[in-house]
Image 1 (cartoon, rainbow, N blue to C red):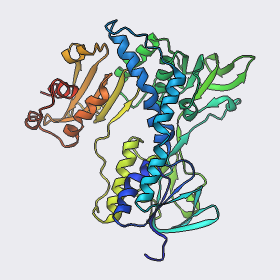
Image 2: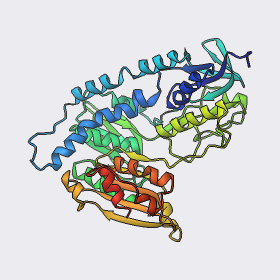
Image 3: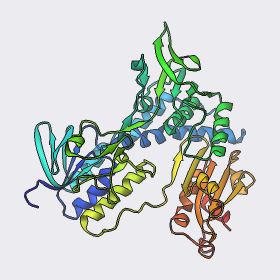
Length: 444
């Protein structure tokens, strides 16, 4: 393999790359990473990290509300300060990641890469060769192709807003739409959400989604069903969104209509690498239709959720595969996911729709948690959980709506992933009092 520049050459530098590239390099593999923009990709620069940093004051604001005056504070969010703090938190992440990779001996190559053949990627007129190539180019925001689309903004623009507009219109009903609506509403913006059909967050339990939407409506967020945008026009002092349900006047528009896999311009078709509308098609070893070219992360066409932790798992799987200590096909674990609204909705394992469709296999136990003494400590007024058990009484799925749903689902992941039996569950002794102790007590 000495005829190649690298053992493994990655196209993209996000979690789908560096979580596996770093340990590979530390084990002596020659690694190259090609990046057209900022090291780290979407999550640390324009996604998860930025979103959570901006959301932290919202969490505090909601907690202050629930205190019912026990703590005297207005909870008003200073958006410019919030934005400045977010930038301080995330601005050094790309440099830190780059330093870590270079310290491990990884070559960082900046520029847009295009596959030339099964072993070669070209960047700015120079070619780099490797025994194995990994495509980890992620996704980008979809923008509606309508008249006036130049007035539409994407999630990257929203998370970089230096001043919160007085009126915001959000197109879409997925994660980004609902999380952005929560942030903007909490920061004082008048928010309107335009839905293509009549439901939001289709991947989550409809009953819990309805509770979250009702809370947002109570806070002033307006949802318009079947409001497909047709055009955007500029008026004297605002914008007008022309929809199937009428005209919506606004100051700023977020297009959260979806995300698209970054497959164009990479030379995939020329090499016979199969793609579909969801991304790159791979087998159970994450191989493309060209055997020594692999793909990882959100650019994949896959049934499991396209999340940062999924990309991390895939990157580490490829690391083990390339290092020779893994020979089996990829086997995804229980993948926990959440929507960072307020309250949160989080889930893992078998989902509610699957359990409801298979009553002979699964048993659903629903509990209202508001009366739980530990939930009363934090004044939670929306807190419900649905636990899914199999015929052996093993916990196989959970979904919860509450301010602490993320921590609860994370606590229960080991039980779901490793199939703890009732006897094994009895051996879990959590710190008390804690949300984990509260979560496990519901399994008895």
